[in-house]
Image (cartoon, rainbow, N blue to C red; front, top):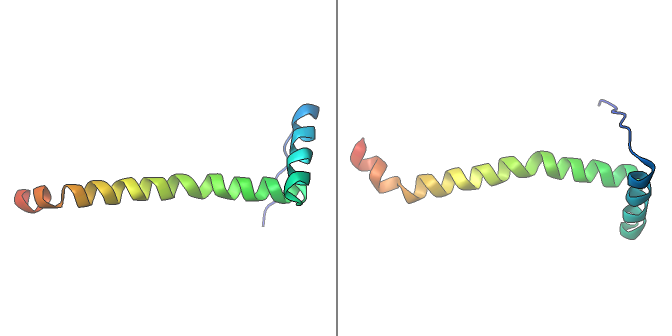
Amino acid sequence: MTTLTINLSDERVKRLQELAERFHVAPEDLVRVSLEDLLTRPMDDFQKVVEYVLNKNAELYKRLA
């Protein structure tokens, strides 16, 4: 596992602490979960679009083959 260090303004740290408190988690855990969500979501969305396009155009692809 790798450790990253980031710089945040005092206002951002305060906001992060408020949100973490609201969700009853440590600020570090909130950042970790948010980052994991960010890193996985685009692939999920892309995969859904690819599947939709392939299914929508399946008949066309068969005729072109």
